[in-house]
Length: 361
Image (cartoon, rainbow, N blue to C red):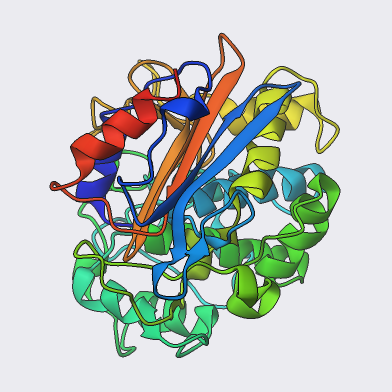
């Protein structure tokens, strides 16, 4: 996920009631919004899913949602921990069949799933190599495990000391897509089930998310939106080798079901997992007793892949080429909103985006 775009998104989190009559179709090529409470969901699609072929964007249009995908890693980790298959505070090397060591830290400083889920593992995104995770077409260029091995094992093709921060795990915040993908891979090794299949069995099917998946092959491609760059040019299909960090494809109607479950889980009204697991998912990990360096003041705390905004809202944002997305809820009012568009968010259209988000009043 592009961090600059994330900062644009995080700075405009406003929550209010749903007012679809205020929405216009001249802001983005296509987008959908939803307003969610534990008891109700309202969705609306605007604009074009495929403007060249005059296909309208609806609440059932499918597209990627960028880094909101990471929240599915978080929920999956808590389900797996409840099943006794992982421990968030164990050394990840106990689950992997290759060893991950930060060359700048003492080997006794272990990396845990909690570190990965709070972006304090010491693993960083080396842009030179992270760009290789994006591949043209509908199939990734290599497996997730192969990519991680090349990136994290000394002597492999993408290995560099620059792939790691000069800080011990648990002491320094550094947002890492590759670290998130590694957390999903640890889950695969611990459960013996591919990450995409584990989420299907434990999240998508129980919640009735029938228009969602981690690949083109997993969804109805006839409902998939064309993605557009910031100049409204259609983009060719692309995929992510590190798909758990940003490759989830879904519709506003499906994502609203998921957001509703998060709100219900926060208030102990969900059967997806235990109340204790929900509490762990949302528990703030940074405290005065356990501070970390380099925290962004706009997002001062995090649960397990669940970000807390400065105003106390919980959720995540997402962006990728041709993708802009937000999903947040207010734990005090139990009201949430989501936005997803098939176009880049950038300095040129961020004010228009703010107007759309504020129109959810």
